[in-house]
Image 1 (cartoon, one colour):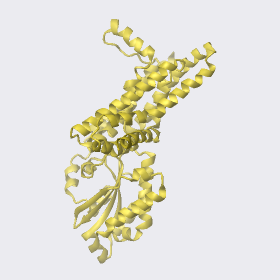
Image 2 (cartoon, chains in turn brown, yellow; image 1 turned 90 degrees about the vertical axis):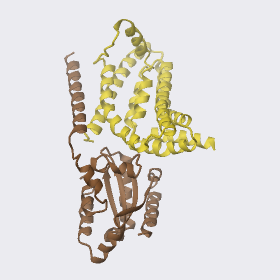
Image 3 (cartoon, chains in turn purple, red; image 1 turned 90 degrees about the horizontal axis):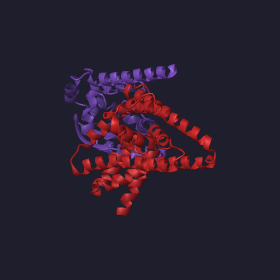
Image 4 (tube, chains in turn green, red; image 1 turned 180 degrees about the horizontal axis):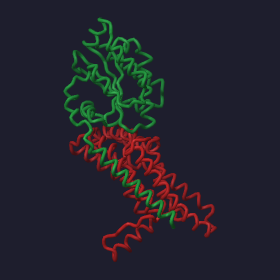
Length: 194
Length: 227
């Protein structure tokens, strides 16, 4: 009988704690003021690229590498990067499911594998973004996102001229070769226009 | 062409139900439906009601999207974000009721207690709201398949009711099938009356424990964001 009461109390404590954390997380004054600021900032600036990689466990090696390349490029690539570039966004939420991780991994790996040169000279960039962060919420409307998605965006002179949601990643995630080929073909189409 | 739409809807539904991310809720659903394991009719009725509950959710969403101009991305992200957070808490409480740790306070004790008791004893009716709730808890895969796969077809076919209904049945099929197999399997030991009554005692307890565990998992994953 006592064990029953103990379990009951423990579960109640857990429920109340959960509710508390839930409410606290919703109403905590977390960077509300940032929303307008980042919205106004051009998405392709180097400053934002650091912020938009929110999950620290994600691939700590990759981010500093891209940052470095963007910050100290040769004059030629700098000009090119400013004119036009392709950004491959991977949009995810705070909760990460296993299929979503696979999609992110495949997207990242296929881009690394086929487009090392473009990644190096700044015409292509892979950017994971958590859309549940307040400053990234605008992406939901911008790209009409209903779930975790891989979106290619073509930027010319700081403006976005074209974007495409690669929705077939969900169909192809069980076939690695086709997935890689799909990402390769789509990215190539976008790179042709830079 | 119509047949093609219908087949796609069933297939998308089945894909949704077998994808790994709603696995936890599927386990809870199977255990809930088959907890009256000796009463095969109740198990089957529960399965049907659970599936219809799922379909109802998809029909309401389908009508909202096809007939009115609801903003699909906002709706999709809202459901994925908030329903999963609340789901954990609700499941822990339901699990506590199943384990008799918690009694549902009834507003009018005299009349409704009997009615409510009968419904609970029957055990089937609870499967309907369970289906509604579990269908609302979209995860990334089911959101991709429903909002990204089914809704475009439903919009094209101008069908906000039938295709979501078929899709809902598809999402319930494996759970229904599994629960039915579980119930059918117990037929082999049906002649031992005593053993069976003990089994029911344990299946109800097991269902309660599974609900609490799944609820804790959801709370840890979506509220505390630890998993």
